[in-house]
Length: 298
Image 1 (cartoon, helix red, strand yellow):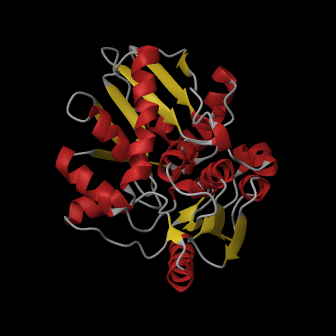
Image 2 (cartoon, rainbow, N blue to C red):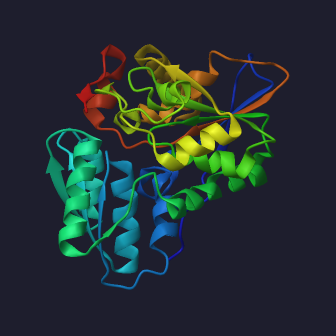
């Protein structure tokens, strides 16, 4: 059981930043950064333990792989709109996926109900301290591989990854959270001074379609004064295109969000890092993204 792999940091050709680097988590086990947190979360669980989870895909993929490695039994609730690439990873690792009509919140409700009825352990996708601690390894690796950046852009769905960045680098690195413009749950919550729940969240990057930010992430964002920006479909398409052409990184929509934000905010005096969080994207969506990616609603 070797744990997460050490994924590469690649410096992109760029004239807007002093240096623009990307951390390529598409090469992580399960195809996304989520494996880091799930591997850490399942450490110490006895073989045969039954766990349940809810996910838009990458948490489920990472948890399925970690569970298989440790001999755990996983049932995971996912939206019916989940990309087939993610569904195949989940089932291929031996987990039992249950398709749910609706979005992440509906999946979480179903998963929690199962946990209560069966006594299984519920493992949250992003609002879990142990999961977040597991994600911190990503930023420690970056420090070792390419030094500590001046600014880091981190995609925000439920907020687990950006919380890990704040815990590792907050106070000495400018951490910028990147949300999808049609699902700005964290930005609106910070503005309101409390967590708010979006009426809906729709768009191409399913990994960013969370209607309510995690409590742990909200508290960390307030504590560190996190800056949050949003990106559009056009921004994501341009970022996906650049990642492929310059680094041969095939990112999913959420995975391209950090670079999408950095491309509009260059500063020649600063060294920037962008986390490419995952690459689990269906071939049909990848082939057609430039003419308008598929949309899902939660």
